[in-house]
Length: 266
View 1 (cartoon, rainbow, N blue to C red):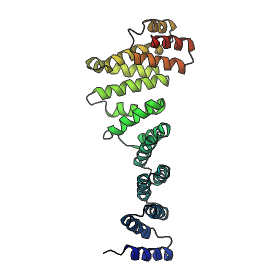
View 2: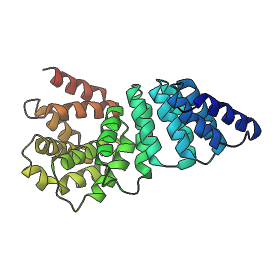
View 3: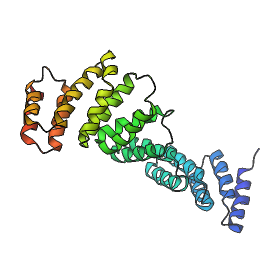
View 4: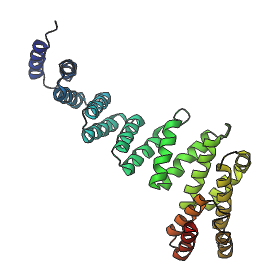
């Protein structure tokens, strides 16, 4: 039978004699886990991380333990310390996912968006890309969306363009409209029109509608804009109408926004 109590006493004596050593605390973490002493597990893990200073993996493990014990705020603190040392996007991704679970989508978007700037490539991280795009879109964080999806367009330009890719084209084009990059949005949509026409889902129609909308905004022609609005909800996709409404609100064009809102209510 293993003498955990005796081992704990010996190691606590070592801690007293060498208070700056982190290794005894690491061993005490394992013993406390075996004995089911959750509070001591987290205490010794935190002490080991503090004393080791440069070992970010100890902070990451502390975050995992804190999360397991239901202390999300402490886990977030530990992940922050992890990132300060490691500068690794993995710690930001872990932080973002925890913030999502807490319902803090704004901070989750910040974490995911920052992580995206640190990955050398996104090719093998499409699950992360999808999650980040979803969060940034929900947050209407258009600038980060533009940065991230520009990278996606560049990295996947030579690969077959499936439905997921066309959705990214639509999302990037939308974000470009909100940051007033009308010409870039128009060029992007024109570039992928062939793929959109070959699409069997609704994404092709959405891209076609967005192309029309982009052309209208690309040239300051009020007559063209009114003509587009006048085509009515029967000819304009509802998603495009909602986008048009949001764009008018962003531009403080209240009368146009009210017109589109009326169409959405029909």
